[in-house]
Image (cartoon, rainbow, N blue to C red; front, side, top):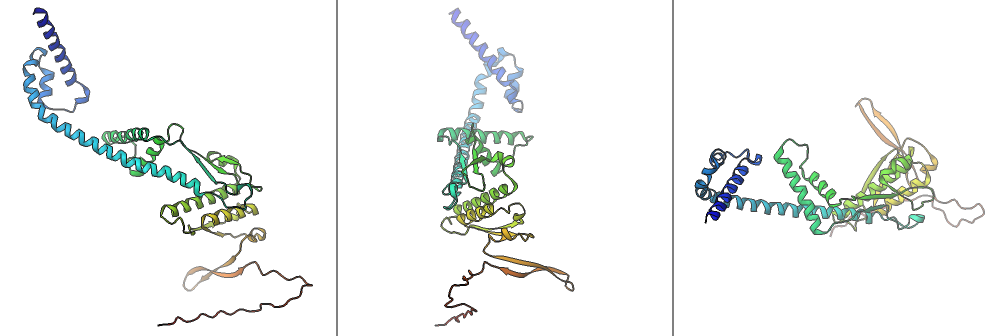
Length: 330
């Protein structure tokens, strides 16, 4: 019995030491309850006689805290589940961007090729949920600290979620390099500035814009609607006046349903010959009203083919007149 008593007393002393260490932990420095102060100040030998009183006092609070923690865990799971849906939608958008960048026929080796190639490894559901949970926990810790630069708005959280989903390899993006013979040569986007000329960079930028415009139209449920918008280009001919670049820009835009409007102050007849319609504008001003404006100077279109000198002309259009039938009322 003496041995059992000694063992029991040793167990009580060990439990008392554990309780004191727990109360003295820096984790609970902000806890100001009387019980914590008593545990820290009372001698270890006096702790056992207060154990029952403390246990009875802590039991209701323990139930409340347990319920609150379970509710927080449910809220966390809901946030992670919602974030997972947004991340999966973002990854699907990347796949759609590659699919929608498919080029039309008639472009040599580029025919039927995808202008964008986006590669990444998508994690399984369990791994994705775990990684997104870490993202949410990190944002929560940053909110508690209040002295961090970590942004917690929705878009920043989504971007960190996508980055976490694509760990460790991330995403690799390659695009076709525009050249005169349209070889199917792909270049990583990070090397575009070193490999592409100014005209090639502009052509790639136009193709990327057209892809994004088509993607936006697709996301809005207008995938069967050919028109994805209009893009005004400020003096692109100064950088990209090569015929093959202009042809490529217009072919990609036409395939993706984007109308290109070129503006330029250069009268480059070789480049302008590629366009079905050229409108010359003139700067005008109304000095009395103090207004400046532009007016149309001339329309230039490709003319009708001229007949050969020896070819017999059966008929010739010399003028046209259009009559609009008035609306009838029933």
